[in-house]
Image (cartoon, rainbow, N blue to C red; front, top):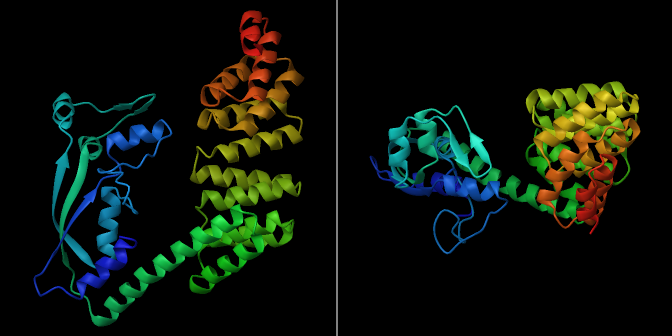
Length: 340
């Protein structure tokens, strides 16, 4: 279904008194999907959870949320389990390993969610009046319209058509004035059009409307850094981290601020934190490389360059940088191998 929420709302009107909806919904939290994602894969298949015809994906929490929004009460849930679950349920384990990643401190209920292949849900409508039903229907349709507009605006902006993207974002704001994602999108378009003052207005509005939005604070921080407003950038990056401690871009931003203040040791700390959160962060890697040469300290950058090369083994420039660092560390054999 293109819009399952809207479909559920429409179906409510067709049910007899005492009627129910039966739904079979794949679980995207399934361990096989998680393992693929960690390895960088999201491969559609002829059948199964990633069936090539599937358009929307759900965890159990999102299933509950959707049925609630559509005006239903879930009466019964049956779970189709992976046969491996029986082994894990008997071991009283609290951790799961997915290749190179481990998820710890899991409750038995949380572990179970990773082994459910699909949920079979039986739900009945909650008694609502006609006005509430119309509101729900309109909400479902509006949600779908906004979702499509956001996707179209984002793709248009990626193609460099920022003026057209702005018009699409304006359409979203007309429908939903408090849509923070659209406000951030407008700010990003103005940044690309080299209109930072206009961008700042929309980033600040996004932060005001949704103070816990890490992305909004990050955008305001990057803009403030661009305008050399160090104090505002510092506050914004830290606000972003309050809401998302692993925001590697905000950590990288704080590292750049420390570089501007000539606090190179402080900058190294933030760039390392950023790379711990995301070893694929080439900006943090390059800044850390620059500082390493200034400080003549190469142990940390070698670690992160090696991690980066595991992800991008064909990046010649970064491999050349790694060879230079290894030369500085007197690891001549390793340096020669990378140069070759």
